[in-house]
Amino acid sequence: MTSTPDLIDSLVADAQPVRRLRPPAVRALGWLLFAALVLVLVAVGHGVRPDIMLKLRQPVFFAGVLAALTTGVLAAMASFIASVPGQSRRWLLLPAPALAVWISTIGYGGLTGWVSIGPEGISLGENARCFATLAITGIPLSLAMLIMLRYVARLSPAPVAMTGSLAVAAMTTAAVSLFHPIDATVLILFWNFGVTALLLVFSGLYGKRLFEWVAR
Amino acid sequence: MRLLPSRAQNSGMPSRIRRPGPTLSLVAEARDPTAPDRGPTAPDTRADGRLDWSLFMARAQAGDRDAYRRLLEAVTPYVRALAARHIGNRSDVEDTVQDILLTLHTVRHTYDPARPFGPWLVSIANRRIIDALRRQGRSSAHEIPAEPEHETLSLPEANLQEAAADARMLREAVERLPAAQRDAIRMLKLEELSLLEASAASGLSVASLKVATHRALKRLREVIGKPGNRT
View (cartoon, rainbow over the protein chains, first blue to last red):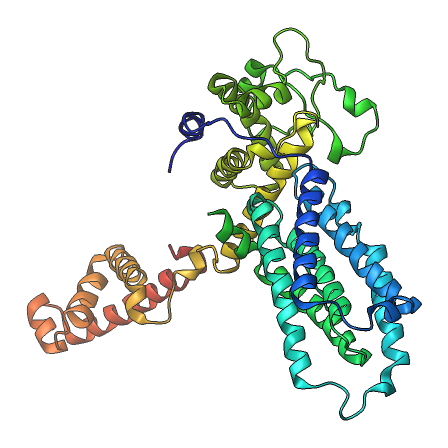
């Protein structure tokens, strides 16, 4: 076991010039641009849902998508700001209002549309394509977030991982509701809420390990 | 140790965003690490000779090793005081200090010189202190201090020392008996001769041997049975 002066010697010997992090807002903007790029690419490759113009005129659907996108933007900013040491952890609460609106629109839609699923309402194939969209948007966004925030591994990984995955979940579910004609709102409820909950639980449990793995 | 004037203390800022700022490095070196620390405040003045931690960190980020060494040496006592406030064990405190310095080294690119250095350092230190407390909690959950009363075990072999002490005490009590009683006890009880053999060996009558043995046993019982006599 080395003594503290020895440790200081070795740290000084290892002191290469480092490139300072850019301001958190700039980094968040970078991630959001990447997210926008992914969404556009998926939209080009897959095509938006056929009834998109009709749906966007429905206030609940429009508010839901808007709230999801806002949650994604705010959660991304919150994770980038709160990940810097010395910044207040209260930044993590930044996406909370938008998240509340988003959840309430899901809940409202779920309550009003509960009876609308018929036995032939949704095919298995549509669900599988839905899942593909989810993976195609979710995986690159998660990886980008992990790599950009890898320094947080030794700081406070779990809360930052949770807001980060909230950003990813919000973006992917916005993509799913824009690109897939799932009108059975129970399924949308499942997609939105289930994916968010899954990502949050996963990141809460394994966020630390994932960040350590990336930071190695 | 002299009390350092503190501007941040007077300004009524919440303690989390107080800025430790620079400390004269010589004063910091001389400070007793376990002494009650002054809290996360220090003079904010950056006048003659005092280290501007923020400036030195900025230089260290650019690769200035001399600045980096001076910064680490100045920061160490401060961090040690922070750790000592929460962690009792002195060697654990030193481990935590090294842990904090290592983390500072790993994430030194996250410091923005436009922002105060103190909160940056304190939030890194707090993470490692929390880790150390968790480690302490985990290890103390599996350990019990070994105390003297835990050493007597139910197996008779484990208590040989006590038996040896008892035998020594008996021999000493026998030594202190009058000569006739002592000889009688030795021959009849310790060497286990018969009354006739003992009578032949000592020249005493069987009756007087019996009386001497009886008196000796009575006296030994008194001596050993006395509560204050046990060693």
